[in-house]
Image 1 (cartoon, helix red, strand yellow):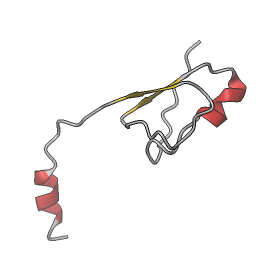
Image 2 (image 1 turned 90 degrees about the vertical axis):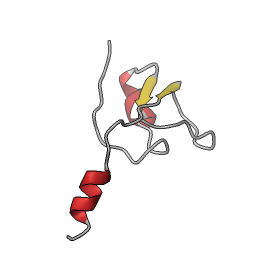
Image 3 (image 1 turned 30 degrees about the vertical axis):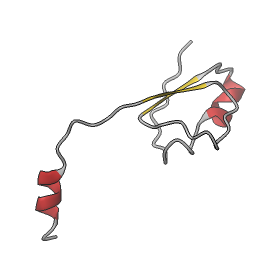
Image 4 (image 1 turned 45 degrees about the vertical axis):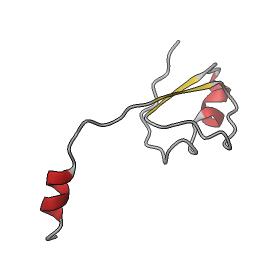
Length: 66
């Protein structure tokens, strides 16, 4: 079985392992953050980088006057 959690998080320090462990989850794939060695995980957690290719400069320039 595969469970997809799309809840927002605050980075690699905000893991869902303790929430998912009671459901019988065996591992977590955490997309978009880099592992923080100082943050322990109750389950095996695999971190997958997801760098953005979007140019944010136009949005920043548009927002400066606001």
